[in-house]
Length: 87
Length: 190
Image (tube, rainbow over all chains, first blue to last red):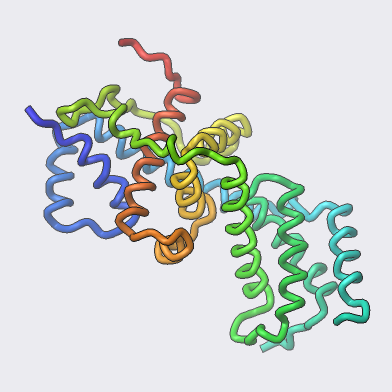
């Protein structure tokens, strides 16, 4: 018997990147009904997708993270260098 | 609209922390993040005449920063000289000839917030990303770690959208396997 798991994994990944066709969605849904391993894969890669988004939004909103003072000074200096005659 | 200033010192004062946090959310390295902020402000200053005023200075700066980060990441991955030979297709290892899983994926009973709260987990996650072959790593990082849209990635990497989807699919397969092995209890009963 030929298993659909390999193709299903591709469709599941594509589902994050593009709209699946009706027939793709149908085949995938029918397969997931009978395949626990692919259901696990589905939730695993969904988690994977969410992880990167969660990390980014957590870090972007981490108000306590500020530009370190020494870096700030260095950047200020580099901006000053630039303001000399050539500009 | 508010009058925007063309003074980079003021940009640094007003937006430096935010730009730094933004860079940190994609790069996870303090030194590199600060470098990106510096390059962004310098580039913005040089290109001030190109600022159209349609958006805020902050949005404009973030746009520049994003490009700097993408260039940086691409260069960094290239410099590691991962060979294209390793650009293998993991599907041949993960699936049997009949299309079934060699090792059936297990259920991971964790939620993203808890996992992301663990520095140890984040370390493992980015190590797994770092093990991907070059092309997969570049497009996956641009797509998921930076959050770039597909059209831009295809243009930057000079690939078709179908090729992009294949690379991302392979990256997901490989990452899932790596995480299951290194975090979610990889010991397998055969």
